[in-house]
Structures are given as C-alpha cells and as structure tokens.
Image 1 (cartoon, rainbow, N blue to C red):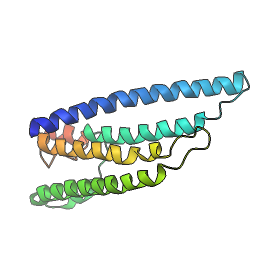
Image 2 (image 1 turned 135 degrees about the horizontal axis):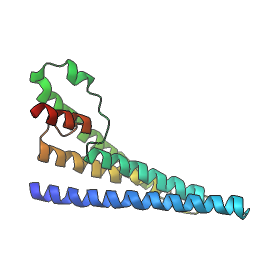
Image 3 (image 1 turned 90 degrees about the vertical axis):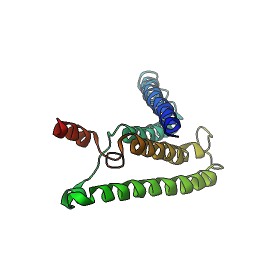
Image 4 (image 1 turned 30 degrees about the vertical axis):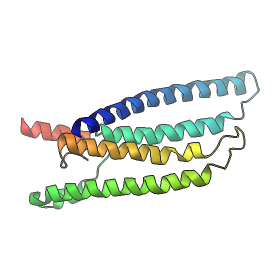
Length: 174
C-alpha cells in the first residue's frame, strides 16, 4: 500500500509540475499576444480575459497543492509553540485529521458545485464554467494525497511542517 501511495503521489507531483510550467507559458504567450494585438495592431482579442482567468485559476490551485506536497506552504505554529512538548504528537494528529476532513468536505461540495455550474456558459468563449470550478475538487484530491504521502513518508509530526521547520529540524539533529 505504501509503495502504491508513493508511486501515485509521484505521478501527481510530476503532472502538477508540468501543468504549472505549461500554464505559466500559456499565460505569458496569451498576454503577450493580447498586448500586441491591442496596442500594436489596434484590434483587441476579446476572449483572452476569460481564458486567462481560467488558466490563472487552475495555476493558483495547482500551485497550492504542489506547495503542500513539497512543504513550501505557510504554517502558523503559534499553538504548537505554547503547548507542552508531550502534546506535539496529539496536536500533529489533530492538524492532519482536520486538514483531511476539510479537503474531503471541499471535494464533496466542490463536485456538487461543478455539477451546478456545468450548464452555465462563459459569454465570450461559450465554454462551461465547470472548467473553472473543477479546479477546486481536483486539486483538493491532489492535496489530500500529498498529506497522506507526507504522513507515510515522514510521519504525522512532519506531515504539515513547512520547509523552514523541516530545515530547522535537520539543523537541530546535527
């Protein structure tokens, strides 16, 4: 089971990595073309705002999931700092469970939201709004997998640590 989780999460990480670069490059090309057409040729492309919004939405959500997978996210650890050390494991377990429950709720209601927006169309491109809203449940599934992998690989205590905390922990051990 452990190998299956690691293999699946590695594939998801690769897809996220390539998707982020592809989205960034696509956004750059479309923005450059939009500026060129508007200011050089005097003929703006009207549908680019919708497409850029959709691409940027996906890029933000994929980036958030990818940040969680590599411990690049922000974590507020004020409560952990005031707790006695003997409660650190319990607090970590609670934090992981809360994150998993939140992501599962977001997946559930995100899929419902996708169903309700799937019939609505954008005014310029005539594309379903479901493509926008699909980013939420899909990337929440990826984030859930990343948390499970972090628990399996590094333990519950380290699953939600940020890069700074992970690096500080390595320095303490040396």
